[in-house]
Image (cartoon, rainbow, N blue to C red; front, side, top):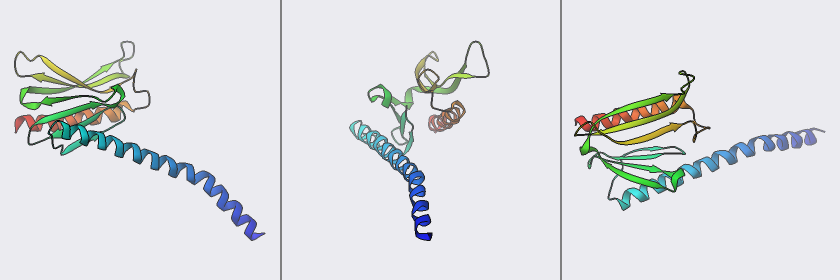
Amino acid sequence: MDTASTLIGLGLLAVFVLPILFLIWQQNNKEKNRLKNLKKLSNQNNLTTDIVELSATLLLGLDSKAKKLLVIEPTNNMKHQVLDLSYIKNTTVSSHPFPDNAQLIKRISLDLSENRNNKKLTEIIFYDEDDNANNNASERLIVAQKWNRIISEKLSA
């Protein structure tokens, strides 16, 4: 009777633990692939990314020495662009609320303005309610503020 109970217990443990272990393994593989894609595109653009950010919808890599930022959108067929920070004057984090409910965030972006005329050079979207139903807006806001701080430090240096 003890052997049967032990086998049943081990079977139930396997039923509940193995799927969780599989999901962790699968998530680690996805993250490794994202990092590999980031490093590959960095090498193609002659960049040495020393600060990176990986998420499901955005890959960022900063080359501190060359002062260039690599922005990759994995959901948009790995579309990427290299931004030269020497042309950037300032950065701001913009959070756009819903028109009917100001407490809910619809979109979070990092706006980069160029040196002349304070014209917006580009916008890096960290969160968009229409595209990112699974992401947490407050978490993405913290990441956008972190990158705003990192880029601002590189601009002043």
